[in-house]
Amino acid sequence: MKIKQLYIYPIKSLRAVPLSQAILTPTGFPHDRRFMFFKIEKDGPQAQRTLTRMTVTYFPQMGLFTQEVCLSQGLFTVTYTPPPTAGTEDGVEGGIEDDRRTTLELPLEPATDTLEKVDISLHGSDAKALNMGNAINGWFSKCFGWEVMLVYLPPGHTRKVLGNLAPNSLNTGDDQKAVNASQSSWLSTFASYVPNVLQGNEAKEKNEGLTFADCAPYLVVTQESINDVTERLVEGWHADVTKFRPNIVLEGAASAYEEDYWGAISILPDPDRAIDIILTQNCIRCQSLDIDYTTGTFGKGEEGTVLKKLMRDRRVDKGKKYSPVFGRYGFLAEKDESKGPRGGMAMIGDEVRVSKRNEERTRFCTYIRSGEGRFIDTLGRLAGLDVTRVMMPEHGYQMLNQFPRHIRTTSTMRMMIPLLTILIRHTTTSITLDPKVDNA
Image (cartoon, rainbow, N blue to C red; front, side, top):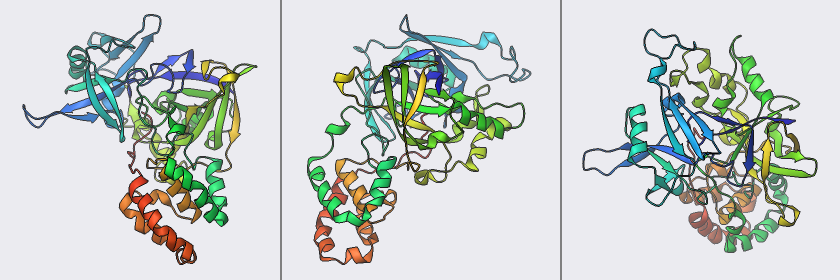
């Protein structure tokens, strides 16, 4: 396989920026999703402001903004093209009045000394961002027609990785199969996890973090899967790969959706060097696939049917069984420093190989777990439980009651109940991800 396309999205949910080459870092390509919009809402003139996160799924008008980067000057330009007015022709070049387009130039890495600090939360993963100021916010507010705030997350600042997306989480790929297969030795596994419960697992996750990407630094899709979507549309329509919001598009897979089972890929810029990406979870899709970028609304005709057509046979993730899957979330793999630098430059045309295949599809998890939470998760799976249903600490007794009777009634289990109750109540950090999480 080879890299066909590379993309970044400097401002989250605006249109894609194609690149011919990009550096892979632990937090994604440089400048990818470092900016994000929030809608400012107030109940009255003196009321405290409320910030509502803006993504293209909820605000399809964001599709009217394109972005271009000039890396040599450290700038990017945003262009706003209003939707066609009455009497113009949709989709025909020149149908939109050129004099209604407006542009704004912004620094890719703004000076931060004078910017206001803002506490923001994206799917329960918090960060301290910076307000880009009245001049920039005013331009965008005029385009949107309501008051917005553009915030910036500087390099070195990241958000916590959600759910079981991180490479060190359990229940990704073959790790999940191994846990399920080990139910016969549940007591020994319980004992082996006690030290981890007491010590936590923060050290393992110190290098994992996010910008304003919903779930992972990288989203990988294949052209073969995009072609399959095109074949589902009526003749003359083609699936727009940028609506799937990928960072890396690969070409040359043996079949469409083969990537469902990939656990890792290796990008080979040259024969002696590999850049490894761990693929941990599926990308769950939503209505953002159906947006008409010309009008900034959900498509009325064939363009608005993509999600529905994927719903037929692509609801293949048991963790999100009511939504279709397309693409895989990825993280830059850890690397022994003695073997060379982590990451590196990737270019269109670079060879890519699948370095790990999972026997089963991974399962998207809907809650954040600390090291102790992963212990609870494992213990539950050893007893055959669907722990994704155990969403809140107060459900601890329900979880205990789900254990098979022959386990619940043993003297060992009765001795474990006080410990289990404490762990469930105090160490399982619960958060339900937005059902429309799709890295927009």
